[in-house]
Image 1 (cartoon, rainbow, N blue to C red):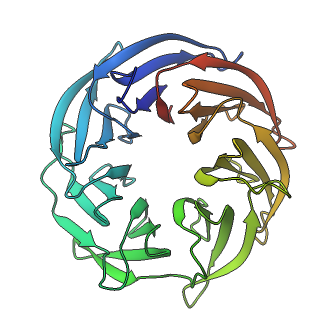
Image 2 (image 1 turned 90 degrees about the vertical axis):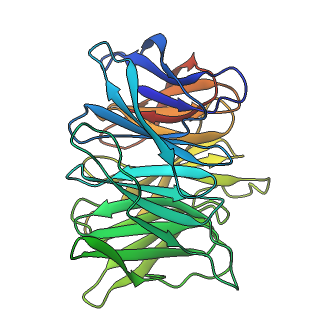
Image 3 (image 1 turned 180 degrees about the horizontal axis):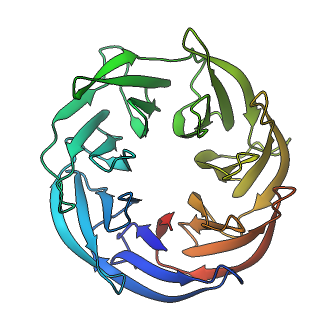
Length: 330
């Protein structure tokens, strides 16, 4: 497992660690490469290359070759085309990278060379308007579509690939009220449902694809009833069988667990589990689906939970010390 970090204090870059898929134990923490603020990571489809945002004021992204021992070699370091890059994703073919720049409110698309390095950006979309400042927070490809969650504009954008370039289809696939702050999202494998976690609203919005476009069909609170203190939601994940959805609360410091109706797509909250740490910015499910690991940024630990595959509920096992962890990928 690779660990993206902030390098403001004890961390030096991207770390790697071994994970035992039988016991859930983490071991042999090593620095894979020293690099500044590698705050979000993604793999190439063949797992030969790794890509990161480097969340500096100027804004960079980097590509790396993965060596046989798991260490990383820097291939490319280029401008993210905006301040505050916070999310990076790759299309299924492994030919295009998309970067979301939170501070600048832009997203940028980059071709990937055959050697895993990055070419200069070929498209940059600026979501800012005179009325509203954009904060692009995440983007995901689905076939010939690209979806973007924009926290500043309180909207999810949809782009369509046409003749080799992406064109805007919709600035808001569903209407939003108030200031929920869309942050991260996941699509089902068939693309019929989108689950969007809202940073300020402490909710998960369920969006269904229709013949005419998209519509919101559900909205569920991530917090326990009566919790009124400061909270900002962060990450969201679906289990492989798509029966359960998990979302992280920074403030309440919990993982909210939802059971998903696989027929109509709606969610039902079934558990709120303490993350045994502070500020769970990111979390990940291991490849076996038996464990969930949470990166607690402020307490500098990764908490490991077992997953009941039938019920979807979590059970705390142990934790592991890591400097400033903010992104986990297997």
